[in-house]
Every structure is written in C-alpha cells, then in structure tokens.
Length: 326
Figure 1 (tube, helix red, strand yellow):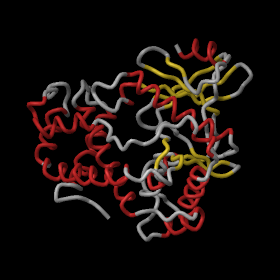
Figure 2 (cartoon, one colour):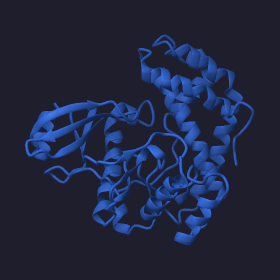
Figure 3 (tube, helix red, strand yellow):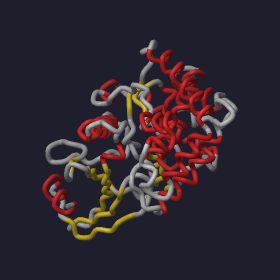
C-alpha cells in the first residue's frame, strides 16, 4: 500500500523500506528512493485521532489535514526550522491509504533526537522557546488553513461514561486492562470530577476572550525537537491549532517563571496564569481520557498497552486529593 501511494501521489519509487519503531501513536518507515534520497513516512490510524466515540473518521482526517497544512504554510512563510510534510503532486500534505489509514511524507532529518520528559539542559529549553516564539510570531498566512482550538478534551465522552457508570459502562472484557481501568476511575471519581469542573470554568472564560490567538504547535516537549547541523528544528505537527499562546507555554517553563519572562520580552505578550492552568489541566485530562478510551476497546496487553497502563495510575493520582492548579 505504501509503495503504491508513494508512486501515485508523490512520484517516488521505493528502493528500500525499513520500519522504525519510534514515537508513540503513529507508524513510521524510513524510505530510500532510486536516486538515494531518504524520506520519513508516517502512517496514522484515524480512530486514534477521533475526539469522541461517534465522531466520523472524515472529521478526524480533516483536522489532521488542517494541522499538517499549517506546518507546510509556516515552512513556506520562511520558517526553516519547521519539518513540514512534502506535498503530494496534488499539493496535499497527506492522503488516505483507505478509510482507516493516512500517510504523510517528510524529509529525513539527520540530527540528535530526544525523548519525552524533562528538558535536560538550559540550552535545549531555550532552543525550544526560540522555536515557539518563531511559530507564534509568524505572519497571518501561516495559519490560513489551521483550525481554531475549541477547548475540547479528547475522548471526554468515554471518561464521563466511566465516571457515571463504572464497570456498568461496558467494554470491561475487551482486554487485560479494561477492568483495572474501570476500578481506577471509579475509585478516583471525585478528584476527576473536580478537575473537569475546574477545566470547564477556565474554558468558559477563555471562550469569552478571542483576542491574542496565534498559531501553536501543541506539544513542545523534548521529543518533538531535534538538534541538527543547522540548529534546532521542530517536528510532529499533527496537533497544530490557532489558540492562545499559553497552549505552548504551560509545560515549557521550569517553574521559576524564567521562560515566561523571556517569552514576554521576545513577543510583548505576558502569559496569563489562568490560561496556563487551563492547558495544564487539559493535558492531564486528555491523557487520562485517551488511555481510558484505549482500554475500553479491544487491546491485547502489548508493550504499548503496558506503557499506557503504567502511566495512568500516577496521572490519576495527581487529582485524587483535589485539583492540581498552579
């Protein structure tokens, strides 16, 4: 399927293809063409991009297309640090392999990559901040295809089903982590409900203020930055949205306000504490809800499942005794 799509949509013949088990949530291959050029190919399952149980896959595809189009627009506006998708012969950033799968092609980047977690050096954190400032201050043309953040929490519907009905919500025999997940959510229901209520209050206030929106990356963590011979580059644009700048800033500051002050100096925009809190809470809620959704569907107990389960307990525990604002 990939070979056919690359030939048909990118005019690229495949000389070699190797699966790369990197990242989390997508499938990746390194491709070499007949001329020796290397490409990085990403395949996504649209079911993992749905925001709710009943959302059509076409809507998930449209959202992904808008995000990748924004990355391409940003690159075309002169942001050389953006690792953007290579457009197809029809000027599209990705195509559907079938009803369920999409494929996008990227230049292969040689450089040092990093993993999810804390920034390991001040230089790495400063490098990411400089990239984010570049994204936020890009010309308006860079966001012409991007969707606007509507403050939806991914898979909130399934988290609320688990909160309202516990094991009675069904899907408790679909894999080894289904029943443990249902119990974990039920045992911590009060804290999770408080988190949802606090988030809703903050989101309502944010919706009433539509000024100051910028193009945002959405996940500026160490795993999405690379250091190349030409400097830092930013990868993984499938969550790009027009949103308040705090969407990219809440996790970037080390806790002493230094990054927030540097951002204000560079842009003239002072980050707002209530929006930093909003995006901090949403990150946790989305992680929880996505994992709950994962274990309400058939799952084999794979290494990915084990990793997801290992992170769910500590994440929910943050909210067991109340909200985690500040």
